Length: 317
Image 1 (cartoon, rainbow, N blue to C red):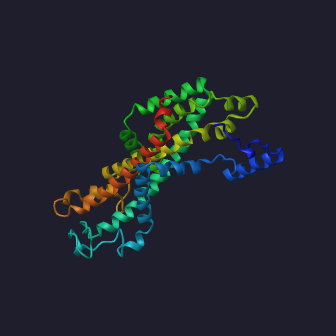
Image 2 (image 1 turned 60 degrees about the horizontal axis):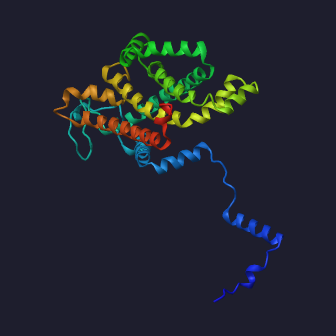
Image 3 (image 1 turned 180 degrees about the vertical axis):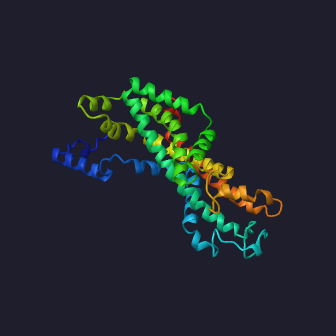
């Protein structure tokens, strides 16, 4: 049998109709995709990584609880009643009281405020200084890179806790001194990480073009280098924050951090460790608060690093 050709198939569509149909199909498909910013890309990354979601949720709970601490407990964090010292958990004191008669749960809730406030401040300063120094060393290279890296190697050769103890012993305790000590200890590590990521960006064409246009080092660093390693910086912030929380608590535990009666998790463990067999919650409650915050920050850092491939960037792959 001979095939019968569809008469409509032989009719050619006019050029105007073809263009209108193409335009219609283009409009149906939607507008051309617009390059999303870092915030939108970060949000998509967080949603696609379960560890990052869980970690950030834990940190968010800590932040909310710390902010709402005055509304969550009727007790004052530093005022105690000697007649109610060393009480076990009860309806009035859910986590018991310490040796000074202060409500343990109240001090744990307020302790999150101190931990978050000092840790976030110290981490922000550390990341800002480390990112600028790391990018500048990678961008300028030469003698500046050599001098910066050798100085950092010298600082890193000294144990971190020893550096912290020397600084707080010489300058005294207090939030500003602790922030300064944390910056001295952690900036070299951040510089090494950021420099490794920036070395992969410096040879790119857009950096070469910016140099050819005569832009300053600061302009190239701010417009070309930093935006292209922002994922590394964010992961480093989350990872460094967990270490900062531990370092601050360690200083308080050793007696070089927060001054009594400041509600601080490390200080609480130090004050109540001698009575751990009588009121174990006085020591366990701040440990639980510290552990959950560190776990949340580590989960967020691990989830983001895997989703962004930061490990490959650090290795220069």
